[in-house]
Amino acid sequence: MGQFKDQVAVVTGAAGNLGRALCTALLGQGAKVAMLDISPERLDEVTEALPGGDWDTFPVDLLSAGEAERVIDAVKARFGRIDILANVAGGFAMGPPLHETDDDTWDRMLDLNLRSVFHCCRAAVPVMLTQGAGTIVNVSARAALNAKGRMGPYCASKAGVIALTESLAQEHKEQGIRVNCILPGTVDTPENRAAMPDQDHSKWVPPAALADVMLFLASDAARCVTGAAVPVYGRS
Image (cartoon, rainbow, N blue to C red; front, side, top):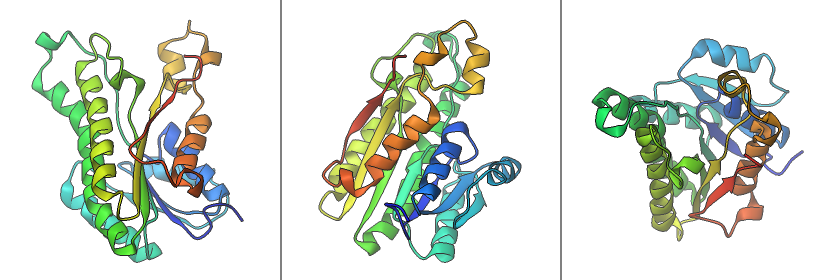
């Protein structure tokens, strides 16, 4: 039936390009999937194209600590446990030079890319500790290691994801919980193609390829991997 048969996976940002690919891949491997996203309408659109399997949708604003706790409780009530947490939700924005960046832009990037991960991990780790097992896969970015100009808030937020990943991995490596993250290069999405029509899209990373790496990190094949930041750059 698949390597994740009867395991419960929580996917944030489930209505986005990578979230959709990951949910589809997890269902194909027998997982039960809790799909989290801020938009109920977009979740409805995603589920229309899903393969068969055991899944449910949970609209939530992950920037609210209380909402994150509520939704994790709801997932546990629905499925009984949480084996995998995939923190896919996030956002990207270019901007002015850092000295011209306003607080709202800074806060928005830190909220979308780091605070959401913090809230979900803080809510889900106690469930995994009670179980004595679990795995978390976060989404950072190549820009976390190779920062670019006019992207300071984004790069800082994604670098924070790496640090949070490493810290959590150290805290829980003796308690059966593994924590890793991926570093995508340029992802082949309709939005990126529209923004960069003159680029060679064949060099970009398909969301399904990123999902494959996340499945590996969540699987027993990666049972000795924790605290890793895995580059997935393709030829981008």
